[in-house]
Image 1 (cartoon, one colour):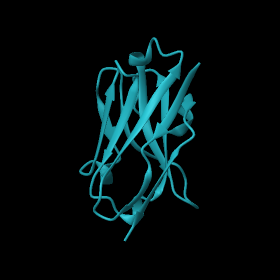
Image 2 (cartoon, rainbow, N blue to C red):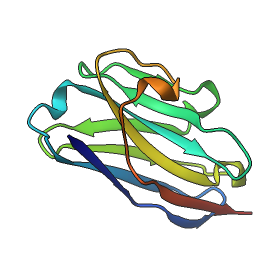
Image 3 (cartoon, one colour):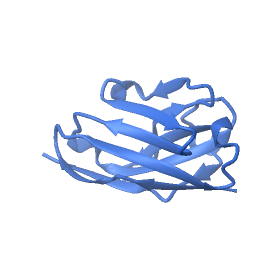
Image 4 (cartoon, rainbow, N blue to C red):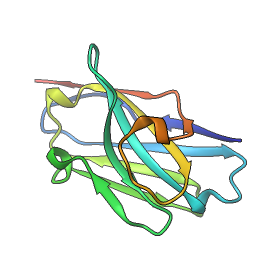
Length: 125
């Protein structure tokens, strides 16, 4: 069983930056074989995909975010990161990391088997 723990959220003013982390615990010996992703959910809205990275390093971004957000992974530390720059109030949401055993980088939430509890990001204008 893989457990995911997010951190790094907080309150920031517009145009600021944050770096989120997602640490894997539990059965992590094959962490490098998982595809992992960031999703977010704002109040009253559906959960949406932000960025994903496969076991071989391929990445996918939600189109409107790819110029401001960067997803990376460190397999030795079993950690996923999301660097968020030029933040806007519309980026305010709970951010979740997710993992699945495979290479498919879909933003369909049902494909992802493991989820963290989330970390809150609040961007003020």
